[in-house]
Length: 371
Image 1 (cartoon, helix red, strand yellow):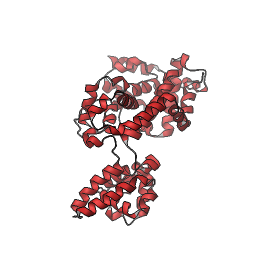
Image 2: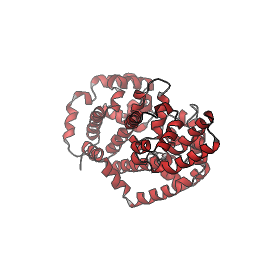
Image 3: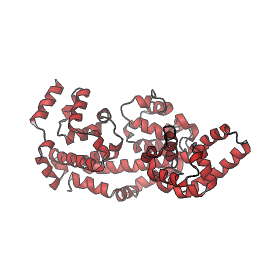
Image 4: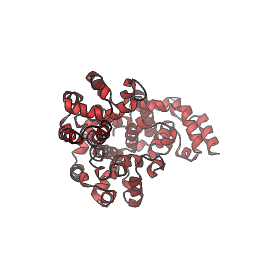
C-alpha cells in the first residue's frame, strides 16, 4: 500500500488527471449530465429542494450531502441568501452553507439564480443603470443590449473582449470604467492579473471596487474560455462535485489522504483560527499535524486558538510551499497514528523531529487547557 504522503502528493501533482478519472466514472458521468441538462430549468427554492436528484447532486458538491434530508433548514439558508450579514447562512459556523447560498443565490437573482452569469446578466443590469444615468435613449439601451447578449457568449479571452469595440464599450460603461476604455493595455493587464491583482492597479480607492467587479465579471484568469458563460449553479457546482467525489474516493482507501486533500482545497480561504475550529475536518488536520489528541478539542475554544497561534502562522496556509510542508507533517503523523492505512514510507522519518511529536510541554499545556 502506498503511504499517506505519497498518495496525497500523487493526486495533487496530477490533479487534472485525477479529476478526469473521476469524471469518467459511469455513475458520476450520468448524474453530471442529468444535472447540467436540468439545473437551468429550476426557477425557485421550492423547485430546487423538491427535485431529489438535482438537490442531492448540489448538496454533495458542497460537502453537505448529510444534510440533504433537512429541507426546511436548507430552504431558510437559500431564502435568506448571504447579502445581509444577519442572514441565517452567515450566522452558521460552517461556511459551506454560505458558499451554497452564494452558488444558488435565489435571494439575489430570483428565477435567474441557476443561469446567472456576471458577464451576461450582471453587466446588463449595470448597463441599464448607467444608461439611465447618462440619459441614453431607450431604443439605443435595447439595441446595444441585444447585440451584447448575442455576442458575449462567443468571447473566450481578454483579447477577444478588447477586440470587439462594441462589446468592449458596453462592458466598460456597465462597470463605470469609461475613462479606462482608451487604454486597452491596462485592461489586458488587469484581466491577466485576475482578482488578486485588481487592487494593485487601481489609481485611487474609488476605482478599486470597480476594477474588482469588472475582473470578477470577466474572469478569464480563473475560468479561461468559459468565463462569459460560467455559472455558479452549473459549472462551479460540477467542479465542486468532482473534487468532492475525488476526496471521498481517496478517503475510502485512506482517510488521511481525504483530510489532506480537503485542507489543501480550503487552505487559501482560511482567515482565522475560529474558522478552522468551526470545521471538524480542518481542525482534525491541525491537531494531527501538531500531534495533539482528539481530547484537545474539548478545551476552551479561545485557549485552543491561542495555542494554535503560538505554534503556527495561519498566513502560511496561503503559501504553497509552506502549506506543502505542513501537510507533509500531517501525513507523517497520520501514518504514525494509523499504521493500518499507510505502508512504510520515507516520510515517516519526520517523526523523529521533536516539533512533530507530543513533547512534555505540549502535554502540560493540554492539561492546563482542560482545567
